[in-house]
Image 1: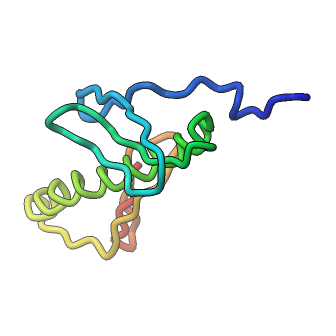
Image 2: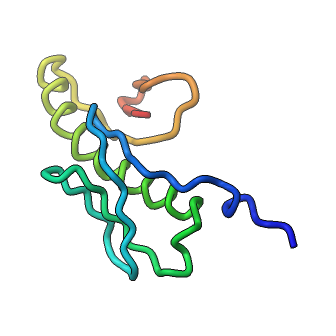
Length: 112
């Protein structure tokens, strides 16, 4: 029987965020993933039957990183909008292939 692609992938062990390394800790059950900044641990909750599913772990990490990015960039956007005297209509977070961000003529800011 052929193994699925997610079973062949190596499970991530660490998460790098803003120059810091966090050890991934997998916990059984359902719950919100938590980034413990004091102990440098990222706790990921997964039902036991999914513990070896790297594809699910990557999706969970993706959501966690998006939440962290929104928190981080919110303060930075407030600062730079004041400095540049602009008022963006909308700020979106996207997966851009070739740039870190952009601003449209309709005052929409896209961040990667």
